[in-house]
Amino acid sequence: MTAFIIGQMQIHSRDWMEEYFAKIPKVVEAHSGEFLVRGGEPEMMEGSDPLPDAAFILEFPDRAHAQRFWNSDEFQRLAILRRSGSTLNAILVDKLA
Image (cartoon, rainbow, N blue to C red):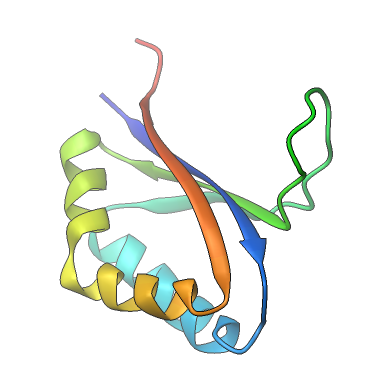
């Protein structure tokens, strides 16, 4: 069953962004994933939580692919870089059957 990683990011500095965004698409693709949304200019529709600076949705064939991506050495190296200038909330969900 198709799975999605949905993330909301607060950006504190931009020093990491050029390298991260140059490399992350290839890592996602190597794990059979695809960006459906990247950036997306978030707009508040409901709620009171702070609006993220950026949001993303990644699609994978299933949870196992998404988890292997997230736990891969390649992604974790990039995650360390990303954490140097941002905070991320991310969840893994399944597509409706």
